[in-house]
Length: 150
Image 1: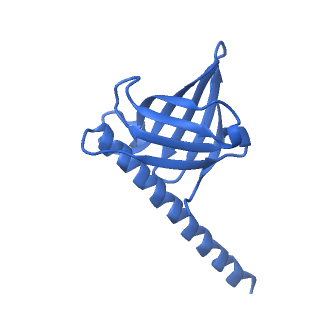
Image 2 (image 1 turned 180 degrees about the horizontal axis):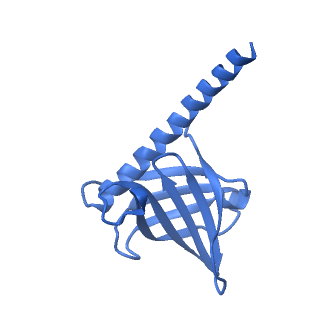
């Protein structure tokens, strides 16, 4: 009986993860198309983090690899901070091979008063949020998850 319950639980987990993966895969694919100049972009992703102050909604309407030319904003949940303005995007390549044509995710960099906010969205469903305070070194990152829209 315990084995059957474990199998059912793992199946539900796999279905849930598959939904997250398809959502983040689609998000990354749409950002890539827009950054490559192949399409329009109006995407959003809702992020929930263990640290509530990092949770929020990322809206992006223009993606380009040119520094400072992408348009987007990260709105922190419950007004936990001022909105963070998208400043740059960077592609993440399979096996960290910069000569690869296979993009597996994106890093997004945002400006905040007194620092920077970072968001990594991967096709496999992994999401990380991080912050760097001006005048300090390093980025403190935490693992987060995507919240599926209703």
